[in-house]
Image (cartoon, rainbow, N blue to C red; front, side, top):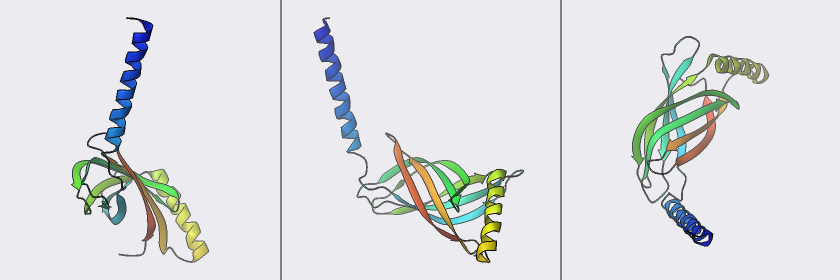
Amino acid sequence: MTVRHRLFMQSTALIAALALLSGCAGLTSRYAPRVYLAGVDSLPGEGLELRFMLKLRIQNPGDADLPYDGVWVEIELRGQALASGGAAQAGVVPRFGEVVVMVPVTASGLAIASQAISALRSSRESKGLGTVPYALRGHLGGTGLGGVNFESSGEIDLLAP
C-alpha cells in the first residue's frame, strides 16, 4: 500500500467518524432537563456521616422522551459542599413531562462540621437560621452516548417541619 493510498484511507475514516458523531449529536434533545429539589428525608447513617434521601423533580421541556440510566447528584448549602450520592436506576422522562427520582446522598463528618460552623456564624449575624441557599449539580446517565449534566439552585427553609 502506498503512502498516498494510506493517507486517503485515514482521511476517509476520519471524515466518516466525524459524520457519525455529528449525526449522533443531532439525536440528543435540544433542551436540557430542569431538575428541582422536591424534598429531603432522613436516612439512617453510620458513625459520623449523615444520610438523606433527596427527591428530585426532573422536567423535560423537549419534544422527545429523555431516557436515563443512573443519576448522580451533589448538593451545597451556603456555597459549601454538603453531600453527594447516586442511584443506579433507569427510566424515562416523558416528552413535555416530569418524574420524581429518589437519590440517597451521604454527608461526611467534615462537611457536617463545616456546615455547623457556618450556621453558627450566620445565626449570630442574622439572628436566626431561616432560609439557606442551596445548589444542586448532577448528571443523568445516558442510555446511549454520554448523558446530560444539570444544575439548579434555590433556598431551603431549615425551620420548616
